[in-house]
Amino acid sequence: MAEPQRARPKPTPETQHFWDGTKAGELRLQRCDACAHVYFPPRPFCPSCASRKVSVFKASGKGFLYSYVINHRPAAPGFTPPYAIAVVELAEGPRMMSNIIDCPQTPEALELDMKLEVAFQALDDKITLPVFRPAKG
Amino acid sequence: MRRNQVAVVGAAETTELGIIPNASQLQLHADAALNAIADAGLKLSDIDGFATAVETPQQVCHYLGIKPTWVDGTSVGGCSFMLHVRHAAAAIEAGLCKTVLITHAESGKSMIGKAPRSIPADSLQGQFEAPFGVYGPPSMFPIPVLRFMKTYGITHEQLASVAVVQREWAAKNPRAMMKDPITVADVLNSRMIAYPFRLLQCCLVTDGGGALILTSADRAKDFPRKPVYIMGTGESVETPMVSQMETFNSSRAFKTAGPLAFKEAGIAHKDVDHLMIYDAFAHLPLFGLGDLGFMPHEETGKFIADGNTRPGAKLPLNTNGGGLSYMHSGMYGMYALQESVRQMRGIAPAQVPNAKISVCHGVGGMFAASGTIVFTNER
Image (cartoon, rainbow over the protein chains, first blue to last red):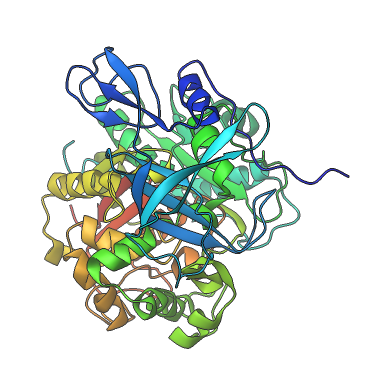
């Protein structure tokens, strides 16, 4: 029997650029050309001022640990508990859910406000997830 | 909306609460509805307005044999029923209908006739939350807690005390699922679910339902039960994605719905005799006390840990035992409303003496939505 699979995102026309970006090793955000608001998740208009003139850009990939849980049960398919589900605040402002790699999944190791940097984890040949690791230096 | 123009004249829960292996979710809706209709001394044919969530109005109306001229299928999670009360009061005031039945039921434990909740892979949640291992409310609802604790200096012991105090209330309620006393140590030693939350800080999973009947305050005086007036109401939504809340230090939906209801009711916090804050998890009463303006968030943990919401104390909170100890079928808002109505009727098992104003505050999803109702038994 096949191993239970981790939930796989299915891009839509509005989010395709984001998933193309992660596959290419880039974390892509959007910025409003009218009011400069940077936002996530993707959509082809600004949720702050409603302008349809928005641009995709490559984010720095830097951020900090805003909050998290360490999930013990029930575990999602494809995950081995305990594992942390984190919310990262990006240097550009938006927050996103992610996982923290290269770090023990413990309250002692996972300090709020710790600096993080993006890494990329290929699920298959179509989807690559953005994850984060403790920033070096 | 004008205050005290609409009243609850019928209120009941399902005949049984807890584990109900002999009824489908739809039948639990009917059981609660029939109990509420009997409570109000009405016939099914008297109902001309209907509201429910998750199940559709057409499903439940057809099953019950109701022919409504006004329906509301607002389904924003566990506080949907607070929104139904608000919408029904407006509809009655506008003359769209005279007598509204609101039903909730959920076969949350037995899962009979209940569609599984699923997250489509191409939804925003499916793309930007599900791949990172969220799996049901216990892995999602507590995500803001560590930030909230750090910002306000809330301790693990204070968050554990929420469950302890609510168990004290549950012990006074014969229908509560969990009645044995617990200590802070018991909570902090219970099985880890999603750090920082342990089993006793997470809601129960049970079966049950409830129903309310509303009509105009002028008609309400002719009903067998003491009318419970709708004094103030509020509602809002924020986001279905917990990761995208504006901040983890408060809930925007709470901060919108709560003050709206207080303003409409024309009351101050000191006027509140009885308070329900939907507690799917132990942090919600802390968010609620702060976001509704009872006190700064910094003080909420100490306030509960010091016993200020216990039986006999100054702010009786979650007097049925709450979602942590009374019952939680998945959409607990209806049970919070039922307890507020019992308190205003003066018939609650853990009755607050001389309570005249009750505030009932609900959450939907993971801080996705909110509804607040202020009840009073004086017009």
